[in-house]
Image (tube, rainbow, N blue to C red):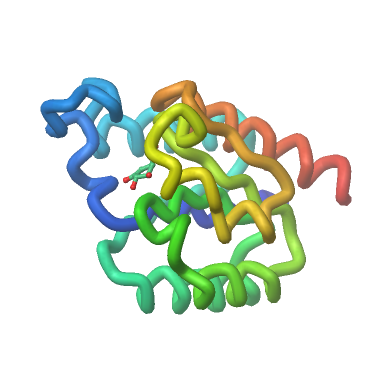
Length: 148
Ligand code: DHK
């Protein structure tokens, strides 16, 4: 039976590739999702890839994942550093959780150095650009096999 992975993306992730700073690379969000969907097929995962600019939507999706997903990959973007509600929801999820960031958040401003998501995450990938998204999916596929 195929495992289902919720890949949840937070505020402004839809602008990746359009951001002039170049911090988030040149690959657009649709293209990042397309690559993840291809890889998920290869890994035998059913991928539910979502993005919202709203904290409550992310909390609702994490609660939905409790019933409908085997693993969560999450880039909560700017909410990573502020959202206790996202942390509390993640702490109720029993499967693997991989936190991912396009940029190396520890090389950036100090306000990006404290992640609430990390307090619930099984592991963290940061600084490897869009490649990190594919590594995160590969990691959850492996973790799901290990936990089976
Ligand atoms: C994405 C964002 O939008 C920022 O708010 C985070 C993260 C970093 C990323 O690197 O993917 O600080």
